[in-house]
Image (tube, rainbow, N blue to C red; front, side, top):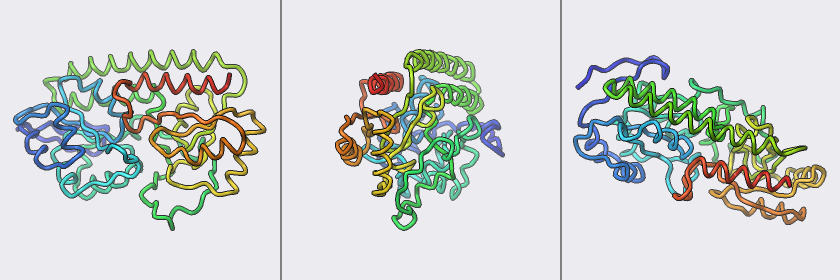
Length: 329
């Protein structure tokens, strides 16, 4: 077993991986993480580092960097909002066998609490140490909903930061670079492999960014869109768009009647033609709002979960961009 390194923060070199860890981990976790391990080819005696992620957008970048030299498993559960992540006792115990946990502070309270309770800070690659997370007030509209504390949404305390950084491919590229360095420290014998894979990930993501710059840059006039919850703030900031959320950062908060009236006025005054809802959430509120104002409704994919296996991150980002541009035509 390699000598462990102590971490004071995610910026420092992570501790090396322990050989033979995969079989222990697979036995200690339950679905969906155990299933994810099986799907990514975990086998007894494998010495490849294991990376755990919290949502599909980050999983995409992690898999590009990992290639065949590391394994990636996601905590995102099918049919469940990643914001609402719950971890079983077995899953929490299994995290002790993971080599790298990519965490966005405040995005998933259950994961934050498990890391603290088990003393796993030395396994963490903290996204907030790699990119600057936006304060919610910089781009998230006041949704005018009810107080969330009384409704049991305390698990959605994002610490005043927007977690959805993966909707900006340049930020995802920065995370890919950081993960390549991190994995190179965990498994020094594969350092060159991870560095090369991270560079290729950056190339693909920068290529996508250039495409999106061209797509959005060709649109004249206001580029405003209304969506069910403010999951596209980083996309909006990167490409000069304006996002107006129905329900703010928390997809479970119901907008107040006053907020819905405000949105109807905004939609009418600013010529919004489409109210967007997210494919992973109920379209009910967005659909009702659209009908009340006489406009269309359509879906966007926030990339929190992988809804269509035939489309990867880049394909979904292009599809989202095409839908937005069509709404401004």
